[in-house]
Amino acid sequence: MSKWIKYLAIAIIFLPVYSYADQKVDLEKAWHSTVRETEILKERGDCYKLWGSFRGFANWDTAYKYKARRAIYNHLLPDNPIEQALIPSIHNGESSVTRLRFAIIMAVHSKPGKIKNKRYPPIDLIERFLPDTSAKQQFMACVQRDAEKDCSHILVDANVVPSYKNFYDENQRLYLQGQGSTCGAQLEINLN
Image 1 (cartoon, rainbow, N blue to C red):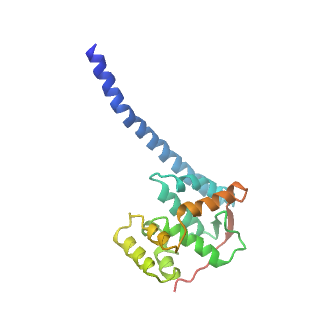
Image 2: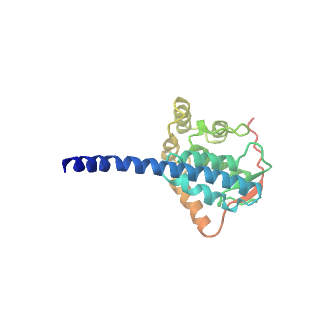
Image 3: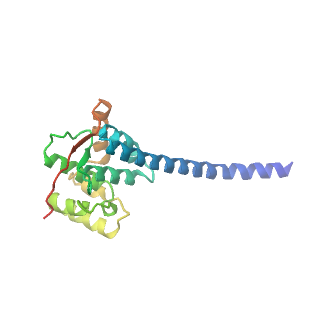
C-alpha cells in the first residue's frame, strides 16, 4: 500500500512539469503556425488578418510576446517587400509621420536591440526621431547595456511613448470594430 502512495506522490509532483512542457510545445507550434500563416496572407495581399494573427502573442505574457512585437515592427517597416502591413490604427492615406510614430512605439516595446531589420534598424529610428530628452538617453543606454532587458518603462514613465497596454487596447478596439490590418505603400524614411 505504501508503494502506491509513493507512486501517487511522485505522479502528483511531476504532473505539472509534464503539463508545462506540453503547453510550451503547443505554444511553440502555435507561434510557428502563426508566422507561416502571416507570410502566406501577406504574399496574397490579404493583410487584414495580420494584426489579428499577432495580437494575442504580442499582448500575452509569454516568451513569444517580444517576438510577436518584433514581427509586427518588421511588417510595418519591412526590409525588402514592396508593400508593408499597416496595423488597424493606421490607414494607407495616413501621413508618414503617423506611420513612423507607430513603428517607433512598436520598436520601443519590442526590445529594439533584438530586432533584425537592415533597412530600418529600430535603434537608428529611435535615435533619429524621438525627442532628445534625458529619458531617451537613459533608454538608449539601457538598451545598449542589455538587449534582453525591456527598457520601455523609461520612455513610458516620461510620457514619450504610450504603454504597450494603451497602444494595444486602442488597436484592439479598432480591430474589433472591423478595422483590420491593411497593406500599404512602402514608407520611405531617410535615416541620414
